[in-house]
Image (cartoon, rainbow, N blue to C red; front, side):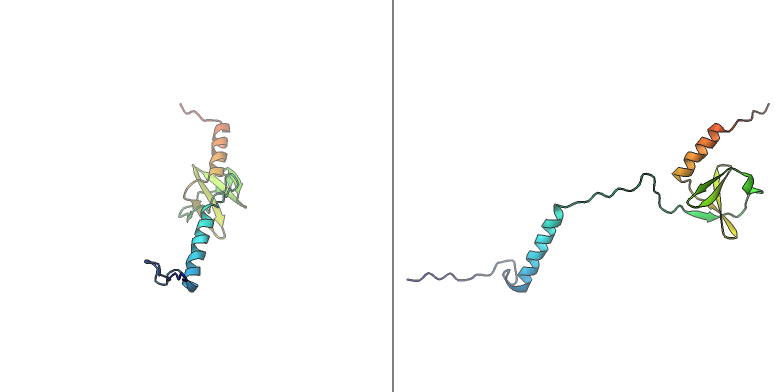
Length: 119
């Protein structure tokens, strides 16, 4: 007597896991399992910062070019009373927050500058 196995569809799959849909599911599972074992580490250079936000300066200090200056990202920036200014075309802009590189320069400048004592 010959033994015949009757095919029974899988209870939670519409097509029983056969055909194109079955292959697509299998490819999806393999790709997910393949990706879970892989990872990458991305490292940048030490102090790389994103674009620093600036705001247009409403009032520009008189003779701003006589204040301490520093070359930052290809432009000259001026330190005036704790704030950094830069010329952008015909207007002046002010940094909304102080970048790390400029902060280090400001600290070095303030330490080296002689203090005036008023009596």
